[in-house]
Length: 110
Length: 112
Image (cartoon, rainbow over all chains, first blue to last red):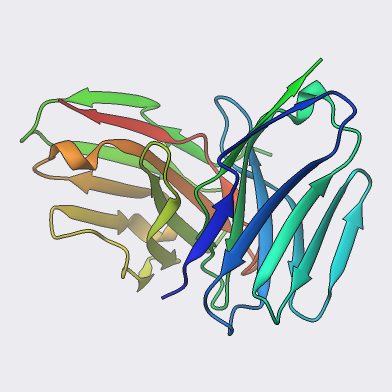
């Protein structure tokens, strides 16, 4: 089955800095890559996604990149703010059942 | 519009006891998923319903876990008898299409 590795497990940045979270996947048939954000006490919520026919997608301060050859995708957050503090999960999917990574705890210090 | 609701939010039971978790999906969502996260690890797939039918239950750990979805509406996940390794946060999610999943806040299960 699919295996998703996510790094780092914890990321601490100063407000205004950029943050990058990286994931790799094992199944070359995966074609949908969502990112979810889980705030304290809440369930994960989709923040951005990318499909295999696209290399990059941007939505305001967040962007995702996908390298199908390397089976690697990343989440980039620019100008981080304290409200960006949360756990971020990457996922890979080929059959509409996403396989998630272990999560990255992002801490943004004011 | 109400989101996905899960009950209870936290359950503490002793090894060997039974626990039933409930999930109410967003109204009109045919797809319902159960996932589990053990502390520090990935959110792991358990099973997927389409309406009242189990579409994929390949992630269910063993026969101590039983999931049902009555009439294609709410779903229950029963663990009987519970073991220590069953501790974790159980998430329910629903979707109308086949991509974006809407998650509940999770049910934290602690088995002592």
